[in-house]
Amino acid sequence: MPENVEIIQNKPLGGDYYRLTVSSQSLSRATPGQFAHLLVQSQQEPPTWDPLLRRPLSIYDLEGDKASFLYRTVGRGTKILARAKPGEKLDLLGPLGRGFQLGAAPTLLIGGGVGAAPMLFLAHTLHERGQEFAVLLGARSAQELAHAGDFAKYTSAVFLVTDDGSLGRQGIVTDFVPEIIAQFSAIPKLCACGPMPMLAALAALAAKEKLALDVSLEARMACGVGACLACTCFLRDGNTARVCADGPVFPYEVLDWRG
Image 1 (cartoon, rainbow, N blue to C red):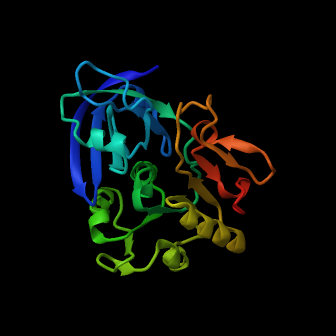
Image 2: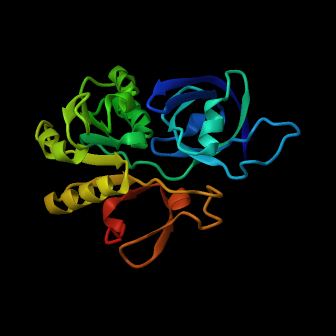
Image 3: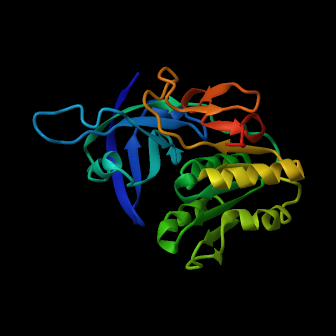
């Protein structure tokens, strides 16, 4: 059931990125990799249903009943969301989807761009479990990694990469994955979210090196609960899956990467 939640903070971070924090009872049971579906509508009077569709946002972190979201203003809905003020209410549906499968293995968390959104909650959870993990974040420039400091409360093993070299090392995240894997005490599992070319490159590396890899897919969603089939993806066995309900997290080997 949808929940009417109160906004605690909606902070601009730079590079069109924002961190939204709300008070939510329903999200208190969420697990890393799940998402919420937010109804974001214009504040004109009389009220309208515009935009009609909800916006899916990965749960960035969770502290008791305080849930946060990292988002980037890319369209009309997120630009409306960026204008929301503390004390205002949002209609929220969640937690939704299937998250990351956690085991005992060391873990490398990889986020490209706004793909960092599900990684902080995962880092928080692994930190509480006392597991070995590291974080690799990449973006176009330093301005788009203004959120990277959020990870420091859970680990000092945070590696940053930018396309232009303005923060961390210059390049793309996939260039540095083998080097970071070599620093672990044992071969780690990879958990990744980001642009499809990045995920495809990681899938190729995982297949070559026989690595475990979970990927969180980004997709346009309408209903968020698997009813409308707007966010289907193709599986290796020829079938399809719903990103919102069967994912958004999948073991890489079940997906068809040929497209």
